[in-house]
Image 1 (cartoon, rainbow, N blue to C red):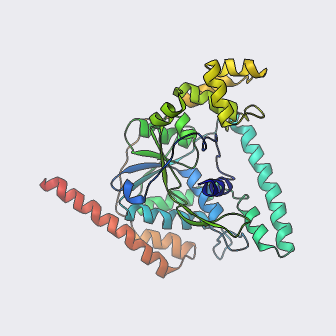
Image 2 (image 1 turned 90 degrees about the vertical axis):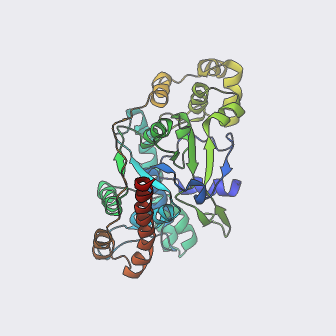
Length: 356
């Protein structure tokens, strides 16, 4: 499990890493079939960054069309989502809205990490070290407005609903799960638990056999489910206290307290009752604490959404992927068959409901 966790952390560079609770909460391995018939809300930006990190040439170069435009995100979105719908899962993608002002330092820090990694990648390529080049390349992923627009256009062609959150997409997905409009929030980050998601599913976008960056070691990465209530019970914490643990460890909105890891944070909060008591013990302060608590406990979300899945349009998908972005027609058609299966399942369920 530790090797898999290491891999996922490496692949998540560039996306929203969030708070690291992986060693604290109980995780249950599940299969795609365990989610058959379920609606899941996927943190869209998080998923696209996973695709951009993973789907690359052996030297780390992302997939591109003949005009030089990156297509790794479209490849991942099309082929990985096909596996979900083939398994009977009904995905809805949720996009980030405007980032909170407190996230600016994290965003700037990620940009600096990407710039440093790109320099290291170029140096490795010049030295003929493709292994290091690939490892560094996974840290350089970027997602611009045009790429995001293409992803939305592909989902429209596939008949898969998506929506933009007022703020953090993960908060919106968690809100949808808390309302029971979806079965689970899907993300690599544990922040969904702080946002109140009753059920978090991880590794859904990166399932399969994966190579550990910089090592000739392969691990099987499978989906895992984390339930909020049992996690809080196991830790002996309330959700509010879990948020306080997150503040001590570090979130996207504040780096946390230096030298305080997850286990120590839990110990401090349990001993002193809350963040204030823990900070007093440590002799430090987090001036933004109240605002960060509000971000997690009362996030900017909307309940004004409608989820509707429509039949996929093969003509629209062919136009976008094959004609516009040079995807293989044969491979696209073979994969599109999975969406046809989903279309037939939708039709059969409608008939069953009508005659039931």
